[in-house]
Length: 297
Image 1 (cartoon, rainbow, N blue to C red):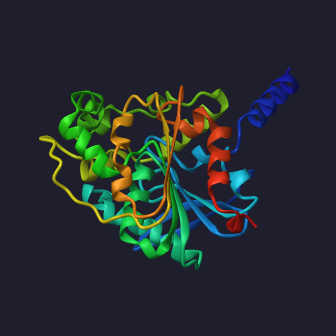
Image 2 (cartoon, rainbow, N blue to C red):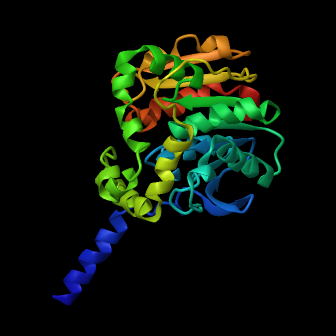
């Protein structure tokens, strides 16, 4: 009897993916006293992967092996998430500090430039890093996060985007973190085994830290479209799942006005906000085809 139970438990443990060892090597970077966790794999030009909310580095599990055949891939846990530090206070989640974390990673790997890839809040950080550090940004790939100018315009003028951003306004309210539970945050994860990995990662994360991204950086009411941004000086690819219920595709219009080099826009029908999870093979191959051949040697 005990032997049967032991075998059953062993099979259960084997069936749950270990988020880490099979995908790369763990490490940590010091960013002005804040410890940032990463998983890295491969050799070659540097590609930094930035996740969104509510997520962690493991979101890139389908992209990392393919990218690592040509690049050194570094997938971060953003501050507040999983194994990265979780400093208290809204002031520790302002965009300049989030950008500083990425700069610390590029410096840690002793590279002059990197391709920055971001989804959702990771996309916002990626846009901001490219604006703040054009000399360090070789290329930019952003998934389901329009340029901040486009989002500001839509929030100021598009009632449907205002309605669909109600969740962000709720996250900005005092006490909102108390309503979040790890089990609720993983509703979007489709694979049962991966969902349990996500629950454990969310338990390690800071609910306050996650929502501080919204409190420190998301536009607040009354919405106005009066902010200007530095031009993005590198080539940009946008990949956007058209079924995104949170960030509507109208915000993608006019992106070409804010980018000085070539802009590639790829829309993905029947994919939602987590486009790289809804269409993982398509997203991976699209990224690889867009990156120039001389980088793929």
